[in-house]
Length: 97
Image 1 (cartoon, helix red, strand yellow):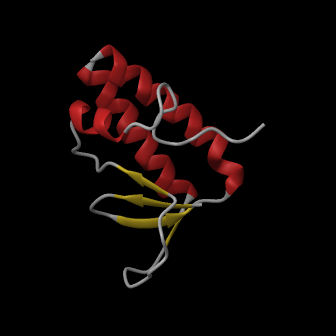
Image 2 (cartoon, one colour; image 1 turned 120 degrees about the vertical axis):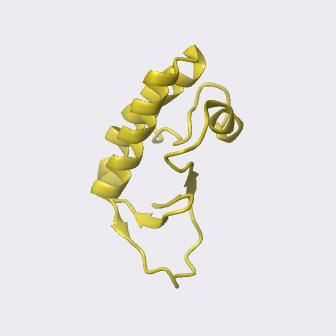
């Protein structure tokens, strides 16, 4: 799966890491819904760090379409709210069962 972090570039993340990324996404969603700025900052930083850790950066000149677009580290709670997928699903969709 190719994930774009706004302002940073694209990362190719293996499907095997999506469960962990979904857990971090759930934490971010909870922080957004609570309006807790400190929890939001920590959850967003953790999610983006995991994408960088698990993902392989694609070259800047790569023209691969992104499967997901994630906010940059400086995004506000309101900006992330606007990016959220379907109700309760967060930024990263759950894996099919």
